[in-house]
Length: 291
Ligand code: GTP
Ligand code: NA
Ligand code: MG
Image (cartoon, rainbow, N blue to C red; front, top):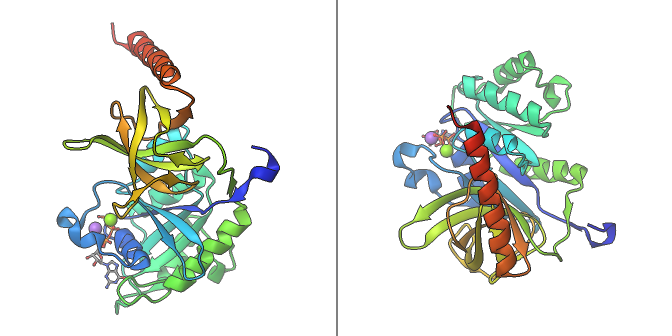
C-alpha cells in the first residue's frame, strides 16, 4: 500500500485468560450486552468477534476466545490478526495454568499485553498478589515499575472499564495501526461453520481494503461471492472496512480458521485459484499420507 492511501484502523484486541476468570463478562460489560447468559453452562464455545464504539467515537475490535487453541492455531497458520492482548486475571483467584499459557503465547507472538485484574467487587480481591505472581513470569506491570499496563476492573460494577478503554486506545496509538480501505479486500477467517439454513458461514476480519456485498472471492480452497454480510449484532451490512468483523454468506464451502480471503476480479479467476489450491492441498495430503 502506498503511504498516502493508508488510513488509521481500529485495533484488534484478543481477550485471553484462564477458564471462568471473566473474559466474556468483561466483554459483555464493555459492549453493554449479556453473552454469558446465553452460553451453555457459561462456557464460551466459539470465538466471538465484536466491535465497540467508545464514548470518544473510536472503534475497538475484540476477539473472545474459548481457549488459546484458536489463537495459537491461527498464529501457526501465519495469521496474526491480534494487535493487543488483554490478559484477564480474576483478582480473587491467582495465576492459573491457562493464564501462564496465555502469557507465553502472547510473548511468542510479540504482541503487547494489557493486564486486566478483574472481579474487583469481590471481598477476596487481591490485585497485589496477582502483580507479584506476574513478576515471577516476567510480566512487570507499571505498579511494579515495569512497562506492562495493568488495570483493576469489575464486570459487575463497571469499575475500571473507562480506564481499560483508555489504555487500549493509548497502546493502539503507539502501534500506529493503518490500512488502505480503498482497495480490493483481504480478510482472515476467524471461524467458519456450516449453517443448515444459510449454508457455509465464515466470520472474517478485514485486514485491508473494504469487503463489499457482490465481491467475488477466494478463501482457502473455496471460492464464492459475498451474498450478504452480518455484523456482530446480526444486522446486514453492505461494506466492511479494515478491522470490522463480519459474517460472510455466499462461500461455496466451509473454509478453515486462519485462511486468507482475497477478492478477485471475476468468477473464472476465483474458480481457477480455488482449483489450484485444492490440487496443492491434495498433493500435500498424498505426500504426507502414511504408507
Ligand atoms: P470461559 O469462557 O468459560 O473460559 O469463562 P470466561 O473467562 O469467559 O468467564 P465468564 O465471563 O463466563 O465468567 C465466569 C464467572 O465469573 C461467571 O459466573 C461470572 O458471573 C463471574 N464474573 C465475571 N466477572 C465478574 C466480576 O467482575 N465480578 C464478579 N463478582 N463476578 C464476575
Ligand atoms: Na465461563
Ligand atoms: Mg467466556
